[in-house]
Length: 289
Image 1: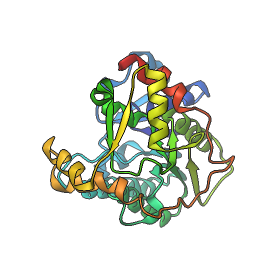
Image 2 (image 1 turned 30 degrees about the horizontal axis):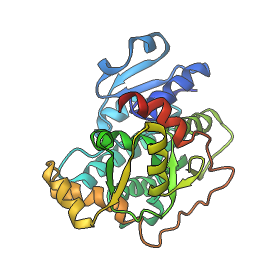
Image 3 (image 1 turned 135 degrees about the vertical axis):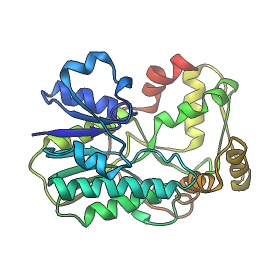
């Protein structure tokens, strides 16, 4: 079985790559920058240089692939949804032309809305496109990544971070390593077919107030989360250089899931994964703050 992994140096991909290697698989890693891969992996993997937004490149390097872990790369242009559309075209063409029989797609909680969730709408479009193909597909609807806190390092150092979400509203938080584990099991399991949706919710739903308490306890300094108005957050995005469409898309990921949104997959033994935010903070955040 030939398994390909996209974004192998990403938050999920670098864990997934090593899990597959430990399982005895020699994965094919698709990356724009092979030089970023650690040398320790060289004898255990195959590497193909490819841009996941270039259909011709993706088709060329995935010939002979049976299963693929697909990640739409983060938007980089002034038109984020167009970036997602190009990535969608790339995986759809690869599946169709190369007969890839299983796709495990890194989606997000909120993609079930299909529209109105900012950048998540791009993931929803990929889900829809994959559902229309003659292949097995598992959509991993992931909760809020613990690693998103790494974008707020400087704010955490001074003890204040911001959100547009109500501080008492709970949502799923998840460790990327746990997502990788679920992905690895789906890739290695040959007994499923058709369309599947697998939510990955982490060990518990958390409010931002609870997150602040955990960060305060584990970092040994007071951390306060302030709720700010949508317009204020939007202006902050513009101030750091985001194009207007990008600022809209990033803000929309929060505002689109804020009011009366209920995830399609409820928390259960199937969707709950083990790594707690406290454990992740001690292992990953504390050394860099």
